[in-house]
Image (cartoon, rainbow, N blue to C red; front, side, top):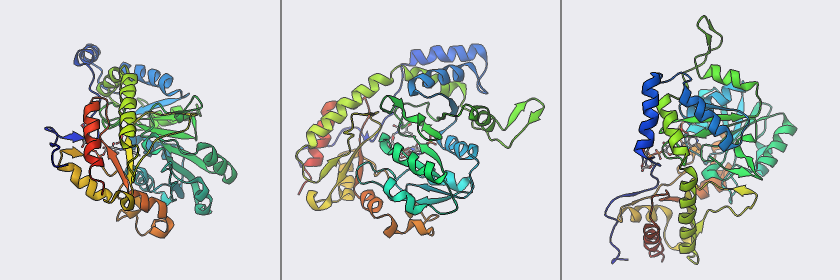
Length: 378
Ligand code: T4K
């Protein structure tokens, strides 16, 4: 261990795809010529069209970030009451419910997928329940069929936070076709990004006009404002960045696949390190994150100690998603936040570690990270 030198430069958990500047410049030139910087401009329309194809969804609306998109998803379904969701997610998921005056009801997660556990959803349903908000965490799809079955039997709507699930498919169907409405995040930390950005995908064509009004203050025309919308618009520079990044997305995914394979290969046989990998042939993965679980008993070192130790080598991993949302100060008073209600989520939040994962990470660096990490085993 002592003989391994730290990386000369910091190695972060992710790095955004940065497209060829010349290609981006050409798009900027077109924007300059049109002098239209936002408000449903031509770049946005082209990107919306291309993403419809790429994500294999029937309807898509682009927004300025994933959080606004999820806000509008809840608004568009006109929900009031309780929404069953997962505590193992980014802050935005439950916060969006709170901003919509909805009460999050935290349901425990499945220990393999780390997504909301369908077996535990029905016990969370009360007369106030209106919807289920699943998160396809790290790009692993929720059990969409079981969730839809529960929703249908209880008259609930289904929303998916697909922030991590760009390009994921189940049996060749775009992940955004499941449930009533799905949100994608195009933040710089996501596989596909527009620096900041997001989208809603939905099957009901009638939602399109409503969502597009909601993202533009409810303005119908110069003389009619017909509902209390907000400013959720993606601007032309974001859309142009998205267009050039989209051209390189398949290459990025294939590089990430090689990195994921290398990590897996290097960790094989290390007792106490478990790689979160999809082993379901019906699912097309997207390689959004590479996550391991560290079993302290078997590995001989806790996740937190591994995280701290890696920093000494200039490796900056992340504990996504620790702390659990149910343990945030503003949610601890909810009955569903009790640790006894969420035993799996509480255990897993103490074990997960997101490792550096992006196309420009060399396979030699991956090998070195693995060598450092496996060398910590006691
Ligand atoms: N739902 C879920 C399940 C989500 O994960 C998210 C967002 C949302 C909803 C909301 O979607 P958005 O409204 O964001 O579109 C990051 C992101 O800010 C956040 O978008 C993301 N999830 C979350 C999982 O991660 P932080 O606080 O961990 O980001 P930060 O700035 O520490 O970045 C992580 C690492 O990435 C840095 O150490 C270095 C690298 N990085 C980051 C940025 C922003 C770069 O190299 N370049 C960059 O520009 O939250």
